[in-house]
Length: 286
Image (cartoon, rainbow, N blue to C red; front, top):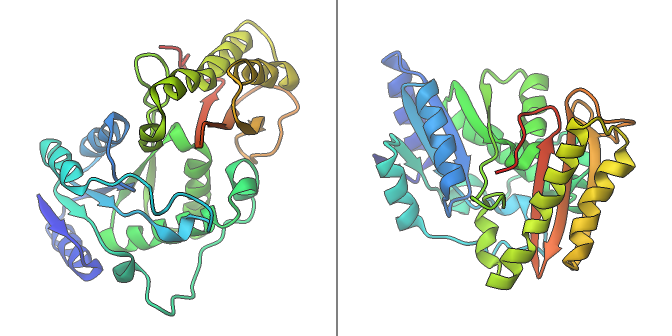
């Protein structure tokens, strides 16, 4: 496995692979890898000849009061996991390599990014779109894998690729959960043992809503209410949102039908967690 820190080195390696007729699949991450990330790498391997994983805690998607400085990092552990998964290149640049001191060009999606997390993190998706487009260019990737864990991010990136005619295939990957249902996340590290138990309210509420949907319930207030009940029962410190959204617009859905997204963001202790289900998907209950 090659470990590359320079954008120029990544682009040169990718160009050599492309010249040899090989396809490249990118897995963009911020590191502190867990089983969810590894499932993305395995999906990438099934879709191309070469797999590139990026590990970059992107400063431009963090607001001034967010957890950039304390975001969990363990590069040596991440590199070993990537080696075990047969990753061909690990891209680990510094912020200075990715952003010039007078950097001034940004990619802004102006529809799907305005609701859900975008309403609470106003610069977040500008940073996500910008760094992803840079990574697409640097890796010369034919495809990139994004998990449904962050459903809004997946949909925003799909829209960016469509609208800007980026020659890359976005490959959605299933959300990966712990055995008890908690969505796998690097931020789960922040949770105390007691908070970890309370955090199950997110998935428990979503599963209850999914079961109600499968039983015929279509009213948004009834489905979101089931999630809120669970969060209130564990006294979540803050609920940013519980929303039933049309997946094509990420605007509130009049009823649950088609590709409807039920999404939640809430604080357990000081940790902001997100989770979701696409209500027409296979049941997510463990």
